[in-house]
Length: 257
Figure 1 (cartoon, rainbow, N blue to C red):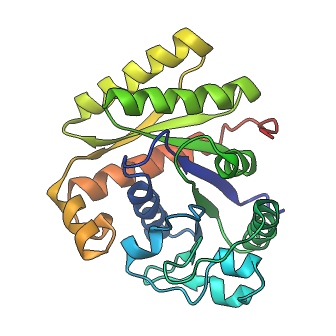
Figure 2: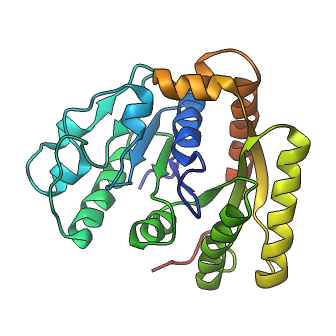
Figure 3: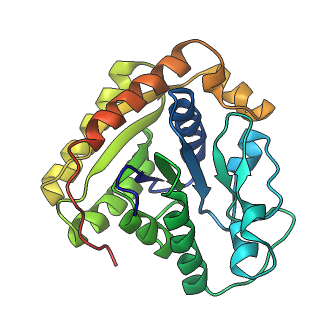
């Protein structure tokens, strides 16, 4: 294992909160800061990172696990220099044993550690096996929050599951779709009060993403919003800086499996 490599998992309690948007923009931000970054899209049912980036990997992790693709064909270098691994091709859906799939993913992470500073795992939403596996392999989890009551409730279920298995596991919170920084802090504080009351833990708030027409345009036009100077780029740069500061004080998590 390359001790200089840090892996973190970007998660959410439910779908539709912009988790993959956070993942691709964080990856692009860290790459722009001069780091070697790998982004693994682990949502095997709906891999969206390649679509959001307008990139076209030759093959997917699912195909590689099914022995229908070579490893070199799944390591796709993006326009920004990120190593992108697509979970499943939208054109090709193959069946493979979940255990075999995650075993192959373990091997992939080990090989990426040799030449990457950061590995970002974009997980499915919820608390399923792939989410638990990703958090177990990661040094920290980044939980994407929005201000909707149902999203807060689902995020709480995810955080509770993690802290029941490892009370010391570091979960960081990012608030998406916020109109103002004050609103973002309000959402993070509200979530923190709920988790503290029921679990004794709170996710440390490391940043927020403005609700912006630029985000919507970037999704429609398939490029990371941080490529355009302005509040969104500034927000992700601040978030990345906070993330790097948090990494220096990470504990060693227990196994979540």
